[in-house]
Length: 428
Length: 179
Image 1 (cartoon, rainbow over the protein chains, first blue to last red):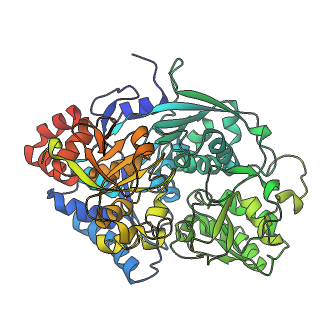
Image 2 (cartoon, each protein chain N blue to C red):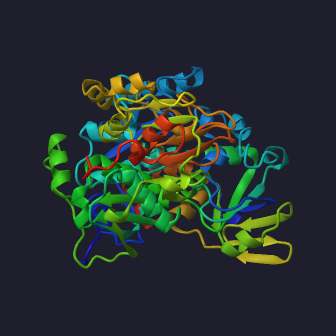
Image 3 (cartoon, helix red, strand yellow):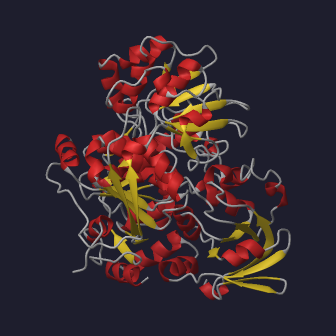
């Protein structure tokens, strides 16, 4: 039996063919099949057109209203309703709407649906977030998942792996966002095309699960098919807390072959900002000092976690945001929202003059909850800053971590966090 | 339909590298499903004249990493409803490539064709011969085989899946693993 990468191992456990070497086709049955209010309606129409008798594995299907939720107009309300209609027609139990759900990629972990070695197929490109948990998340379009709803499995190319080794430990104000912006800066926005990014190394243990999520979330921004973090003591503790302690951490075999190896020295990183119009343009925050911002947006599937919200609170405590700035804070799930409430974080945000949104994809993709007008500039903890991403084509979005975003809200311009909180020792 | 019959002749439209799915179909329109409505917003900021210029059967030519970003199938639906019938690129983002094939739209990978095809001129894409012709130029493209070819030959993934289901569960497994 040849030495396998983590990606090959996880797929082998789910493939009709058993072990399939990278570069070849496998027919894979996912553990979870996820759709949302944007991808679901098209998939349901396609599914009905196939004429299948029923959904192949209704208990594995998860439907989440997150993009335009709570419904922002009649068209999106109709789309969200179709999730519930499909669920009741086909016996799908897992349907999540505002108040009891959240943004799908953060929600899936909270539901205990991701363990070590889980395969998630999601009709959303950020399904790769699941890689944080030593699982494989693959993004697909509506048609691919409509076919999978009918047949239960899907053909896919088993990607080669690129090994990313972390060494050292991140300094103060450096988070998952900075690590992934640095990675994409290095490899380019299609540098990981047809590959799986596999993360490990001695520095892995310094990264919390929220930080791993932030990194895994943006793997697709480097062109990756998918990604996966090594399983370790931390991922095992997390899995136990989610009721998935039975799942076994997965590591690559010694001698597994990689397309490339990249070493990232976490201690050499500093807070990064990616300028519009590319997530690949990350540079140290100091390069953008003085850039005026009109809106600060914290939260989405990559950085709406309690870790990010605590970072915002740390900066905002005792401050108010600049008079010309609007700030929108979006906890990624209802549970995170309530935890932030209990910790007093929402009080800090609102006292500072920020708006606290329900969990929603919202303005990240230009849907609602903080759209930009022509000539406006935002700094956001989101994952894409393509032209027009958050609103008018003549608006601009800079990507950064939550500390940087919050500091920028206070000053009204892109600001290094140390300007508000002089560094004192290690990371929080 | 067979792969041999999949030949598209139309006028060429050109875009650059890293054209993302927000440019092809902006996020604010994602609750829309009607193809004609989606087509009315296709490339509206990146190439505002595209919608009035494009004719049924036309060919989209772009550079590297075409369709990067979101998994939104709306991007392909919009291009298709606008009239595009084939795509020629140096490279395409994974999900966009799959979405296009699944909707019966061939995506031909050819760096030479991506560079050389001239906008506003007629060209012919032949999937079976994996070639694109324009005037006296013939560009070779990567052959589309396996399940990709099977899907295109059926006219799209839903048609292919209907065939597989009609053939019965054993045949579905075999057919899927043989490609």
